[in-house]
Amino acid sequence: MKVSTLKALSPADGRYADKVSALRDIFSEYGLIRFRVLVEVRWLQCLADEAQVPELGPLSSVMKDVLNHIVDDFSLNDAERVKKIEKKTNHDVKAVEYFIRERLGAGPETAALKDFLHFGCTSEDINNLAYALMLRAARNDVLLPQMRELLGRLRSMARDYAAVPMLSRTHGQTATPTTVGKEIANVVARLDRAQQQFRDVVIRGKFNGAVGNYNAHLVAYPDADWPAITQRLIDSLRLDTNSHTTQIEPHDWTAEYSHALLRYNTILIDLCRDIWGYISLGYFKQKLAAGEVGSSTMPHKVNPIDFENAEGNFGLANALLGHFAEKLPISRWQRDLTDSTVQRNFGVAVGYVAIALSSALKGFGKLELNKEKISQDIDGAWEVLAEAVQTVMRRYGVPEPYEKLKDLTRGQTVDQEKLADFIGALEIPDAEKQRLLALTPAGYVGLAARLATEI
Image 1: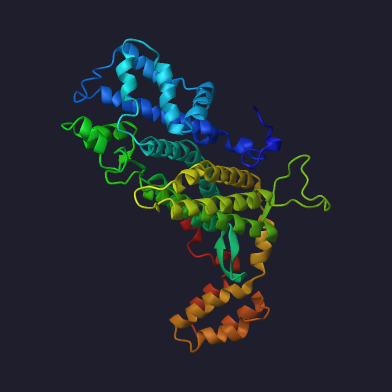
Image 2: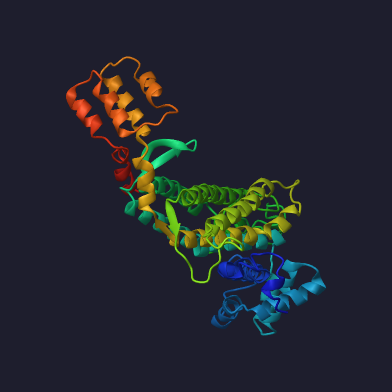
């Protein structure tokens, strides 16, 4: 029965349903069942390809097509059939096995195939590979494209604004000038590294039976090289094999995946807060949307809601990702079931990340740089040149340079004239005086413009 998004328990399936639509076929109950079916069928095909399992023999072209169609044409109706079987079995993975039995029918080739369905497997052999495929699909097909789009937009901003001078604000106070582009480039460098680390997390799987020792496999076929056979299955799924496990794959790679994504998200929380602050200072304006309301009572407001939404959803994602990383690698003895219910929330965490990335992209698409306001602030901040002057004084041996500039500037209003009088009285070469006198706050940006373009 279709449920209105207005009655959804989670905002990911309600208010933000359109932002996570690409994740539905991956992380839903339908998605989990679909990946389980894929793993069961691929294992059966793998066994049939092995000369060491002669009872199966090579599959006919017809049977190969039948098995491939079970995977390739898996539908919502098929998932509903699995759930109906599960009501009788009260076991979700066994229901998948029985569903495939049904789909194989009663043809002459199918009797032996049915007997080798789920051969040597514990449910975790199926589940761990299913979740591995789910998390890989979410990373490669949904998150990384969003990440690349955001990185590209930020890189363009860094280059476009590379030479736009801006006051820094260390500790919230006026400080040595930078450029708008350089500050964005700092984030680009961080995100690029974090994105690569997330992309490069190795996704692993196990397929070694009830407690990881191939016990049943070896009893049935003592001469078969079961580690090699199961590795061929895992290789065919483009996953890495974890050869040493208990009943479960220990989830260390899942913790690495979660931590890598959490670190990426944390950088964007930092960025969203900074952009929020720059909007508050007037450094950025936001493009107006026709009919949009900023406040229910204050008509003038244009609130930075996209960055606030992104920050909140990144935070929710990180709460779950942190729990995954801390909880999943822990299992009592050879297996307990606490990981099972936790893993079912992978889609919730990834969904919050997708929502946050969508909001951040929307927010950056609405920004307009307010050069007039930025120039106004930096042009009135002559005190920031105290650093430059006292550093040149050090070069020429003027006593107590820092202390002299501190007396001149700390807690006091400093304008161009006052600073020029101070420089004019210095016992340094005339050429250096002229260089300092020509310096302005907007011109005191070091290598910021160059650095902003080198990302």
